[in-house]
Structures are given as C-alpha cells and as structure tokens.
Image (cartoon, rainbow, N blue to C red):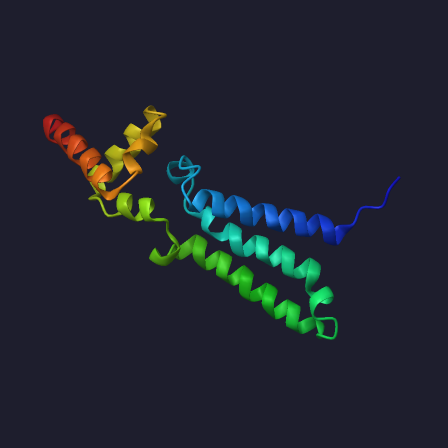
Length: 144
C-alpha cells in the first residue's frame, strides 16, 4: 500500500480551503450568506494555516519550531476573529450592501432569498439591492 504524503495532503487541503474562501468572497456562491453565520470568512486563514504547517521547513529550514507555532496560533486567532466579529474589511461588497439595510428589510430579503433561487440577481450592484429593498418595503407596509 502506498504511503500517504501528509505534507502534500495538508497543502492540497489548505489550498482548497483558501480557493473556496476566495470563490465565495468574490460572489460565485452567494447562498452561503443566508445559510451560515459568517464562518466562511475564516476559510482563507485556516487554509493558509495548513499550508504553512506543511511547508514551513521547506522554506525556512533552520527556523525553530516555535516560529511555525506562533504563525499557526496567529492564523487560528485570525480565523476565529473573522468568524466572530466579521469586520467590514473582510466582507464582500454585496454583503455590505445587504447588511446596510434596516433589520425588517434584511429579514424580508432573507425570506425572499430562501424562496427564490434566483435571488443573487438582486446583489449585482448597490442600485439592484436598493431596488430589491424598495420592493420588499412595499410588501412590509402592506402587511402592517
């Protein structure tokens, strides 16, 4: 049975996490927005953490172990921070546009998005989000 190369496996897994994080960040899969609580923001530092762990000896062969451990701790802390705090600078533009809406409108957007698979069409620009919000505000007022 062939022996598994752990470093290669960790590198591939790390690069995959990073690629997925960037894929989502650049708006290629928007459904996560309504289905998660921001955990996606930590994927890039977690992926980088795996890549660093599996390759640091190749790039810095004389580095003491505490150097890579410090990097790993910093990246893990960054991933947790991004998950919990979700700072504005890490959010894609379209997420900021949605988050800028009043709470009732935002809730109406979520309900609409969960029932309409084509909802990402409303997030192509700030104007599209505003138009969607305006349509939903009419529905909120008519329910009141």
